[in-house]
Image 1 (cartoon, rainbow, N blue to C red):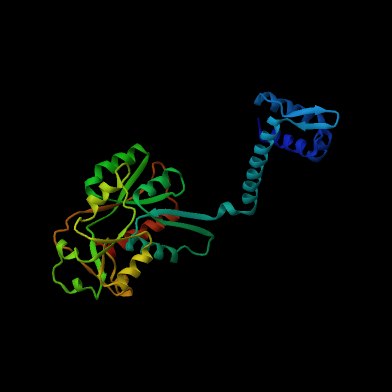
Image 2: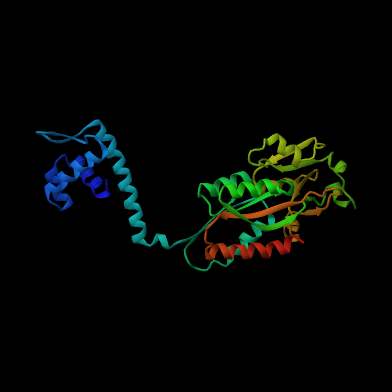
Length: 307
């Protein structure tokens, strides 16, 4: 079976005649007839019923022609895209955790892409979904974040899935809160101090194959009575700046971000857990010029944000 045979079958079905299809296709009628017979032999079905009124589709033929039309339409779209030069448009895609230094890198990267046509896809989500987007080839690059005690687990999993990982950053979470939060003026903040306040947390700290309840127990202190889960970073900043009773654990933020939202950044005494951000992509994937430009911006941002 080949595309030409499919096109012949679609034209015969549309016109109901071998002769008319041959005229439209600008070929000899025997060529069309022979192609249809070869197609039927390859598929093991009868596509057309030959009648005195012309070529009539059988039930199997109707199903085949419907699929053939769809395939031909897709091929035509691909051919048109290449004729129009759409394939020359550069694309960049990355799925990342929510972090100020990464979004800052995106902003700097966007300033330096020049005048060429380009499409940039930037998705903020958890590590589980980032890995999924790479495995399904939705995104080319990803950054995953995990606690260092999961280091062996993640490295083994990446190896099994044919992905490679490069360390981008290591850090401990800090607290951010409104300048009007009573804790902002304390010289030292402890876990017990936080128990009377409202924690803002991202709602999807998944670790693949581990239950969400277990991850929450390990990642979030148990002494917090009030917690607001959000997905969007914009929501977290609105809550933190408007409600002086809120706080959030985050990767280090820049003073520029803190000033923009009237926030302060503080260290919590006793918080020793270290997190890692890994850049991941398929083994054998060749980094594009856009990929390399983003990675350069990412490294610059990391040096500014994470000491």
